Length: 281
Image (cartoon, rainbow, N blue to C red):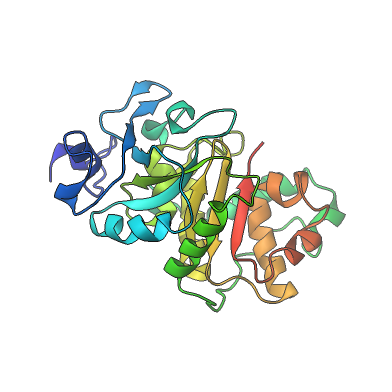
């Protein structure tokens, strides 16, 4: 394996096809037909040794995800929408830190969430955590799919690019070299949850678990916002409450600090929801 296919810690990863777009911006050598775009290698510490992502110059619209997603996957690249319209600008200004990230597969989702829960629950009023208490309730059981993960991701991407939502303000399709969709934040060194977790690979371990249990896909990233599609959402209030507990541990700002007053109220919003949105203060 070439040195280019190793992380800074020496852990084997997938080869990165993105450097080939430097001399072949259309991506034809990779079996792609890309519109004009930009390669991003800017990090908090200066240029990275290879591109972290590519994004289209023009904003995405309904159908963009379907048009490029499948062909990109065959080339070893995964799609994600990135917001270039926020006050922090696009990924080139996101203070990416790929060198500080570990590998998602080195972490256990249950252990990660239990650690977050125990720390965050201490700062919450007991009534806000009902029907749970200070002890971590454990992972929610897997749910039954209501769509394929690919179809649900494409549908959610369309809904984020049809101009009817306040966020993302200016979604552009991006391509990232990642083993699985859940790994995209770690692959680019995303620091959106920095005030909650310095190593986003730990959160990616949870996203991997959600891929397995709920068919999620990482669909959109902003400076501090993450949207995932959900192919197997909870369908009852009891199921949703277990998922809400995971959301609180994963992102307490979304679950209680800037949303509903209690986990039970937040859980009601998760029943049959096709997407989950997380925002870190």
